[in-house]
Length: 306
Image 1 (cartoon, rainbow, N blue to C red):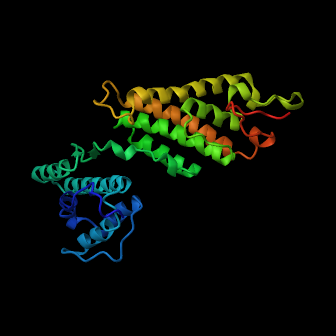
Image 2: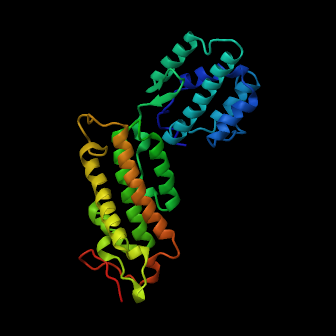
C-alpha cells in the first residue's frame, strides 16, 4: 500500500456509512464486502462500537484507500449497505433513510468528488480510474479484466473510455507480437501496430493464407476478408477518435458533445477487435499455427512461406 499517497476517499465519508450499520445483520455486512472481493484483516485494530462496526472495520482495513480500483469496489459496498438500510426501513413502515442522514452523506461524499443520487447510488467524477497501464498488461486475462472495467464505467466517463479503448487495442497488439516472439517497436504508430499484430495471426485481409488443396475454410473466405478489412479500419478509427476526443493529450478543456453512446461505440469496437485477436492467439486450430511465419523484415511486413 502506498501510504504516502493521498487517500481517495476520506475517513469522514467512510465513517458516515459506518455510523449507520448497527441495525443491519452482521452476515449482510460481510456479504457485501465479500461480493467485492474484500476479506477481513485479522490485524485490524479494534475500534469503538459493537460487533457490526468492528466487522465493518475489519473489512475496511483491507482496502487500499489510495488505489482507484479498491476505492471503486468499496464504494459499491457502501452503496449496497445504504440501499439495504433504506429498503429495511421501508419494509417495516418507515420512509427510508431520513432526509437529514442522506444530506449528511451527500455532503461527506461530495468533499471527495462523489455524488450520491436519489436512488442512493454513488458516482465519482474521478475519471482517472479508467486509466490503462499498457505496460502491465502482459497476459490476455489482464486485458479481459480491463475491458470489463471499461465497459462498466465507460458510459459515465465517455472521453476517458475512448482513451482507454485505444490503449487496450495497443496493449493487445503488443501482447500478440510478444507472444509470437516478434519485435515491438515502441516508436511505431498504432495503425502500423494493428497491421503487424493482425499479420502475425493471419488476420489481416491482405495477408490471409490461401486455401490448402482447394479446401474451403471460413478463415480465407471473401466474406471474412471484408469483415477483417472493416474491423481493421474500425480499430484505427478508435485511435483517431481518441486523438480528437479522448484523454491523454493534455487538453485545455474537456470535449463537448460526447455521451454514453459514443463511449459504448468506441469500447464495443475495441472489445470486438481485442477479443478476436486474443481468441485467435489462444485457438490451437488457428491458421497462424499451421503456417511458418517469419519475423517482419525492415519494411515492417510479415511474409508467409509456402
